[in-house]
Length: 247
Image (cartoon, rainbow, N blue to C red):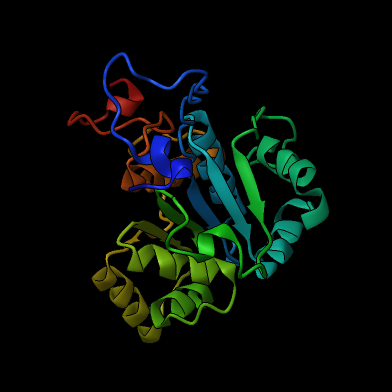
């Protein structure tokens, strides 16, 4: 016989015999599944800003990892100092800036962004059980490419990328370097073999670019294409020569 204190908990329930005063269950909240965006130290911070804006405009959540080296690049290219303690203010200033350097060109909504410090190896994205959709590294330096290809996990950006690969999630690596050495090419092949999308930050001109922002948005749009995120960052090819010129 079951002890009295367990009788109600384990006894089968029948219609019309529900226990009285049973609290109603709260509806389950939809689980947050962000895209991890890693920004490494390569030149090309406008590419990262455009990808971040594109994700947020598409209604996606973002977990952001800004490497230590990328903060120096960001300071050099934009004059913006990115600080962990003031990340929301600094990120807002950065994403509002156009590729031509003009402030307040955009009005980003940062409600969907979560920031993780680059040295925080206990952060959510460091574990495969942390729910994410995938990861984009924009821009990816050759040092970052090597670290991910070799599985070094020397910081959170590299660790998150390694986790993305082992969990068979989407990883987009927007490498920004020229020329490329044989060693780097071998690392890129290794990433491709592991399932990553290797996406050189190489803008095209068939979309009718008339401004530097158009060239930046093309690369950002191709990165979002690889991740499967809808956007309207550039004019797509429709099989018509001269279509961008209105010929």
